[in-house]
Amino acid sequence: MATMSVWLNYKNPLVRDLAWAIGSPALITSNPQHLLQNHLAGDAQTPAASCNYWPEPSWFETQLQAYLPALDQLERNPEPLAAILKALKSPRLGIYFEALLTYWLATSERYLLLQRNLPIRAINSASGHQTTIGEFDFIVLDKLTNKTLHWEVAIKYYLGLGNIEYPWQWFGPNKKDRLDLKLKHLLHKQTKLSNHPASKKTLDNLGIQIDETWVILKGYLFYPFNSPTQRPAFLSQSHLRGDWQKASEFERCEEVQQWKKLDRKQWLCEHENIFLNTAVNNCSYTSPTHSSEYYTNINNKTTSQRRFIVPDLWF
Image 1 (spheres, rainbow, N blue to C red):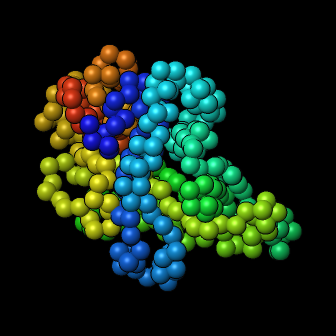
Image 2 (image 1 turned 180 degrees about the horizontal axis):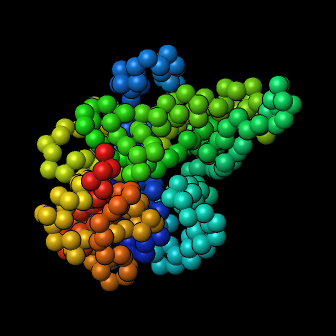
């Protein structure tokens, strides 16, 4: 089985999600700076983003292959992973994704997790109150290269609307988020955190010096249903994708009883849909009225066919 689908070998959903979190491809091309500079025109800070590193798909594949023995052991006894994930206090998908990466780093032979969610605070000169400047997602020591890495990680789902050649034409399911806004925040704030004087002081006190800053942005992109659209140049060639469709069109064209709504925890990893029939009590289709909803076609037993169904007035 191809490396990028290795997670389908695991029957335990938590182990499958862990394999996906490690091995799935990024959304953005591994060298996006010059492309994003054109697409995020008018932002004078964009050229400064060249110091960031966006791992290539082969890097994720390599990490997954190296971790297969640990995944095989978890498949036999998933309790260590299950206990960590059960203790999560937030249902947010981003928290779940970070917890999976934390487990991987904490049990990896190559990496040493130095800090996770390290806040940086400073005194506001005007008010005299302490304010939070930002937070390091992960600070990791790569024992192979002996480099200390700052990882900014995120998991995102965007629906392309209109001219999808541009990052600002990719919207979150509730249209409260946009790909270009996330990229600007990553490039100009989150990845610049180690340059802030307050960060330098905190890191010095911890005996940490950041050598490189990495961006790990994963998830799915959803293209308009039945639209012959080409992949925009700034997107990774191997990014994961689905499609989206207006509710009225979907209800005219599909046998809606074949579609089941995915629980939030099922958003990460595509599944062999037989698991959804036998092990998961997913909700049947109901026409969305306020926000878009995420469905899979359980009639397709071997291939995960995923689609966002959006209210007719969504756009």
